[in-house]
Length: 331
Image (tube, rainbow, N blue to C red; front, side, top):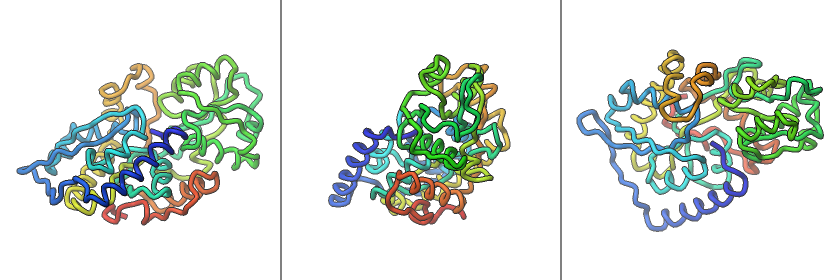
């Protein structure tokens, strides 16, 4: 769900060039798409197989998209970087990402717009979708103790590294003195166990997996950003697609919002979707901490991420709520 640093720059540069080309030639995005149950429209979506998208699989199963004349066709990718170009070209009508990746892309001039919330942090200390974990017998007791230590994240210079930096700064220590290293989650759990790293910033289901591997939490990064839940992932499209098909995206946004509301009030049904689109041990699926699902994208949430992204140099240009979020999204 994150853009690895080098690959992200390459993809964003390519997508920016692609945007200029499409603007010059007019693009190939059909216009006037107005879905109804009598005249349904097939909508191509780009997802990655993470827990956060379970709400839309469930919503599709419940008929929330079909009721609005939308046939949802989900295309999966192992990385979020690959989802930007097909959204810009119109191959995909929308895609999923963590909010920091969309902020980064927007700050670099890509015409991406958020059309709906994806998922949110829980706001519960010690029981959130991303935690900082250390071995059970580690002398590290707080994020302040991570100074000079080796801490893994799944992608450098993206959401989880930023969350680690947030917690260290909140503990009144120097985030620049932490040695962040990039490791895939399964490798990080192993590395934490054999002492090759001192701590890891987790994301579910790997927080649950690490919890079963003799570890303990030392920080809840999202709570170090805000004492309430934060919208941490989103669904996005391009400005050109919104301009050419506003009725389609109004219907799509409503279907997503209904899916999020239903998933938020039916956690067991949401959890049951996981094995249908990702490889996950049933015992782990039964224990993972689900994110919060709610349709609102609050200004306070966006502003918290913008502030942290600026503080830790992930973006150099300020991105406002109105820059990021489509005006058609209910406030």
